[in-house]
Image 1 (cartoon, rainbow, N blue to C red):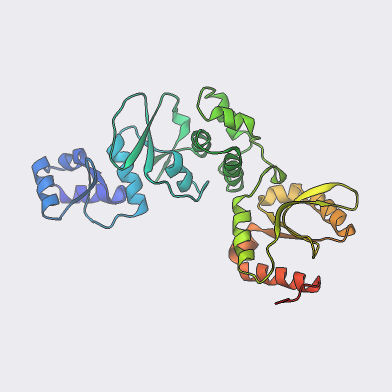
Image 2 (spheres, one colour):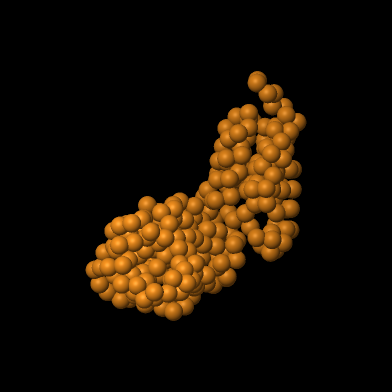
Length: 306
């Protein structure tokens, strides 16, 4: 029995090993089962073992893939979306995709079968196979709304995971995928004004909720001096304060610099106070953001407790 080889497998797979790997290290199946009975090994999923009862999120990902098909399964759908940080919701069960057809089920894991999964749909991160960001969005488009898919695409673009044209290329190569229709319907080259509430707006809304200010109107249409109307993320109409969550990447902000200034000038000429907060400001210095908003409201005539 090669204890050192088994320890190396556990270390390389976030504490997980299959029974096949354990046997390859010189242990018998009966020996592995004995270790389970004596609490020297634990079995979180069928055919998968770990030396510790305390399993990390990364360990559960490995367990799900190994239990489904050690040679071919990939982490996918909601599990991949959370891994890539395209969404924040935690899936109820871990999702994996196995190429081909079949009906094998694994308790605690949602197993998807796919005949369209290609090599370029898979990325390997620290040894774990995961669907690529583009393929993950395509898979999730089959079960998410238009707005949710738009959020995922924009988040992927901001994080640098979805270069321009990535979604169009992904859909073009898989035209019969259940999510292809929704991705075609929404604009894969999303701009800031094309979305409803976005992840950064959720964060800014959470900051605003801690302030003593009255609730703002959201996604509110504001006319500029030119007569052009703009949809603003958060608005206090009585105070004429218009607040935008600027979730674009640095490159996109640079490209839109002149348009942003023209828009702010148009609103300012109509008596509005436009305010913009970037992702860095909202996430790293929310206290300063809140102080700026309250200060602007007081300057505009709002009285605390009034």
